Length: 330
Ligand SMILES: [Zn+2]
Ligand SMILES: [Zn+2]
Image 1 (cartoon, rainbow, N blue to C red):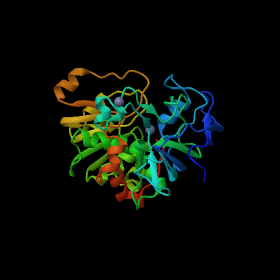
Image 2 (cartoon, rainbow, N blue to C red):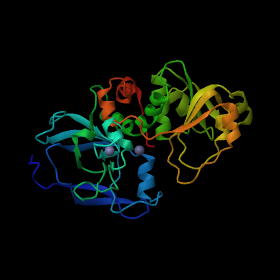
Image 3 (cartoon, protein in one colour):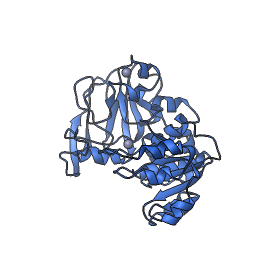
Image 4 (tube, rainbow, N blue to C red):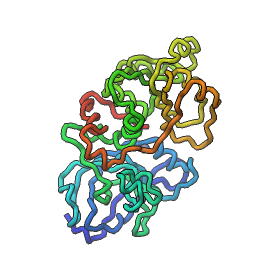
């Protein structure tokens, strides 16, 4: 085991152009400091954002790029001022690895809204080096952006909680949808949708999966434990299901009409957008006004640092279903 003063190198899987092909890439890890944690990556989820970024779908990719922002692993070394972690701890790293620490959001533990936040990859760190993500052997991360993985939660199952899990857990908490007995809809059953079903069920909700075809019915009902399954092209089924849901978490990462799903909501129902879509969405405003619906979105409204402090966080929720969870990509 070396010193934190030594330069470290690691090898990751890097995108080098928008083809979507990743190949091995060896690079220096950024200079480390007293607040840093050196992490051996053991598992990393694949989020749809990784695919968007690798393929430059958002038009802001810099190559070579090592994606991966659902990172879990083991602490190999800690800097002299690190108080929260020790060698051997099981930890996670999410999408943000730096912030200004002085603005309103930073002082409220909402650093994901900091205008100077630093992304886990495809960004530049304070030392001027590119940040690189978790599809790699190791990472060096400021302790502020590291979370402890609770005992009893398998590491590979913890990984998707660090983005997909937080993405669905956050709006449920932020918009007052945490109490048991609510009726929720999960639109789209990729990685975020998978997490949505599991977390909503762990909160005691009645969960309807809404999908464009019948292909995922068995997965939704039998594997993930959803209560109902609705095919969006089934006009009769959609009519019968109208006016029934307290919320829908819309995870679809491509342009789609919102009106058919707004019709499924009760009065004051909330349609929560979580898919990253690189084109404008449109909807008919009178439908929202007359139905008194809310169309909402947010970016990881709870920071990972808050999650690590909150025993009822999605990491805690995750522990409750870990023994029967399937790991998905999103
Ligand atoms: Zn800030
Ligand atoms: Zn993600």
